Length: 208
Image (cartoon, rainbow, N blue to C red; front, side, top):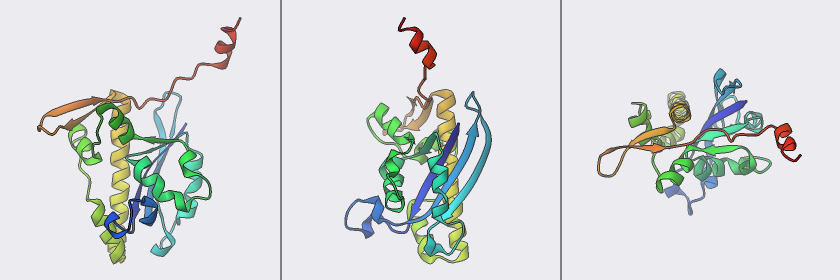
């Protein structure tokens, strides 16, 4: 099994465009963690790599990342269906939505009935916090010197690692922690497991 956990940063904020279309924010960098899993869904190998839009003048370029997505049995993100996927859609030659996306926030929202931020979950579940905010990522892109682009890459990759850790915790423990609006520590039950697939032979035997 191959999983890809990813995060996208953009060149603009929503307040800089006319509507709420992430595809118009223009991608700056995409960080991906590709890993191989054994038959028990344990990680046996993993690699982090960041891909840049051409205007960054850095390698590797975004065009080289598509095979990573296309070979994945599951593409994991946080709010990826609402943000990252539509942000990347204009750059992909086919329909990016049709790949094997798994949005952690979408699962959580379906259970709770409302959204939670990655930072809010990571803080209470893992004792970790993000290294910055999305507005800083846009500012680093606009400055675009070596130091700023290094910070942008570090921020994007840290988001990927936190997403991975939240995903792995949910897979193993089937719950995540957060603070509710009354400042009370709560748990939300989540199911990040893969659907069970019955062997075809068993299905056929049941017909006789």
